[in-house]
Length: 175
Image (cartoon, rainbow, N blue to C red; front, side, top):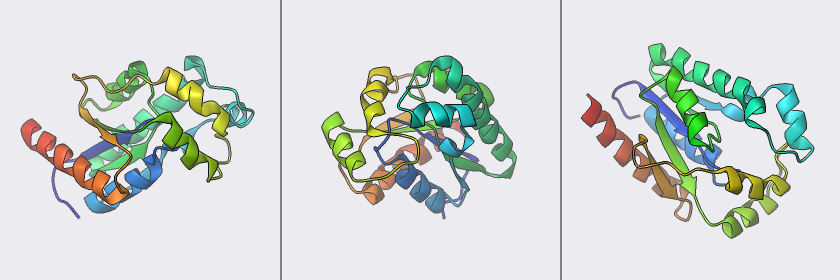
């Protein structure tokens, strides 16, 4: 377990990039809770996605507020790592309105690699047909956003090492 300031990390990106795997490992290494933000989606959103229809900004708004509230609620207890696609800057800005210190981790890779990964898994309500719409919506982290864009090609353990190196350096700079 790594000791330090309050942990506030969102692992973001399209389906199939390893958000849950990376997020779980980060939370374990940092000694904080892990939340799969997909579990916070309202039932209507789950129904829409399960039917293969991409969510609109309006659909995402209540979900983003729940994810943001989870970030805010956990600040008093040491923080957390949470997974949330946060594909657009506007979505990340919404999350930052709940926790201005949040650090975003964006695992990314070529659509062909991600498509191959999701062909071999089962997800309750995120069919592979939505992958292209997610790539179309994705606005990668900008240079002025606190976070790190990291390739999905190394092992999850190597990715987590890269993230922790940057995250801990950023946390020290903020202190």
